[in-house]
Image 1 (cartoon, helix red, strand yellow):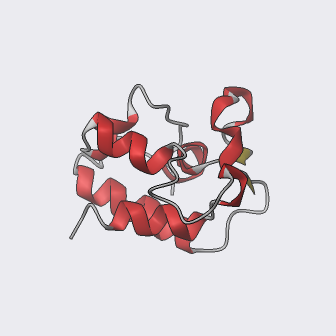
Image 2 (image 1 turned 90 degrees about the vertical axis):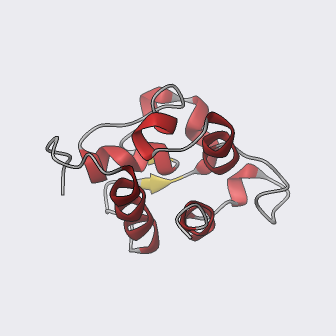
Length: 109
């Protein structure tokens, strides 16, 4: 469901993205955590922030994601950027949607 401007609760926004990350991805979206640095790919390929275009009607970047999701900048970077201490993989290409969903869900508990 596209973002229509009515979701002002940052926790609800996180929950909606978590749900989208745990479902089958849209056919016209290719998951690739590595493409976060290529904004032209957002919305058709990329990471969780690119998937926001499908969920909320617009892609997000690290300039707006912390406020949009009600996270500190450090927490947002820890979740949406590749940090080996956060994800149990050696390469950012191996980060899965469910890993990001779990990291984001941990901010709600």
